[in-house]
Image (cartoon, rainbow, N blue to C red; front, side, top):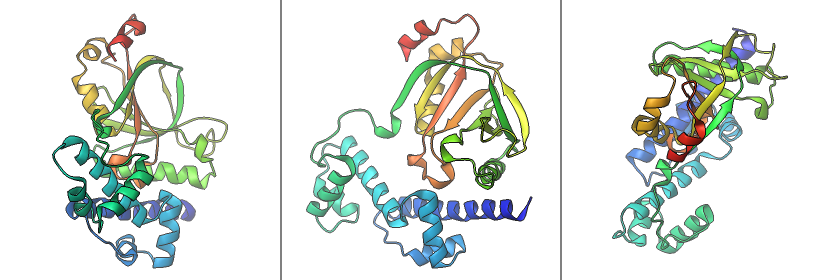
Length: 277
């Protein structure tokens, strides 16, 4: 691994540690007031370099990340518990008054917290449709059968794309799962920028009709598990394809978005199956 590639991989790992630290602190202590020096220490970076790298990778400051997470959890709590008061949720979320909480909530979601959203949980919201995929050519990295191996392979794949100066809009990154749902490969779909630049193993994926679920990863996989009609019609011997809609290394769990492509058996009429989605 060249020096520049190794540097890119290590930078990704350090920022991911900081993102995960923000997430864990938020879970343990929703009203936590973290200092930037704490996160810089977690990432083993100077304060100056940490702020620059975190904002470049995540697209916002750590304080903004934490504030946004607090508001998302507050919205879920208000939706799930009609009896809880806005003032109680405001104080539990670390705000000094319900007025300050309301202003922040309205900036984030475009509505005031007193307007209770009675629809399904935003974290459980999954869109489903049927799509016909072409045969796909991928540049792939194999993954060991552990999530530590998965993160290492994914970081190296993304670092290779960065070093090769592949524009973000051309970085179509996927995960390939075996029929037994073992995470087997991290892949970048070939295009004019990827082809030949990152020099990995080329892999061909069969096209055809797929059911496509989009949403937060945990919700998408749960939807797949409970879809009885799909269990009868999916092609059991073919892999499942997952596309990352944002970079999971730099997003806390509830912010991650994926598309899951589940292959259908030959002869299944997608227009009939779509009625069940």
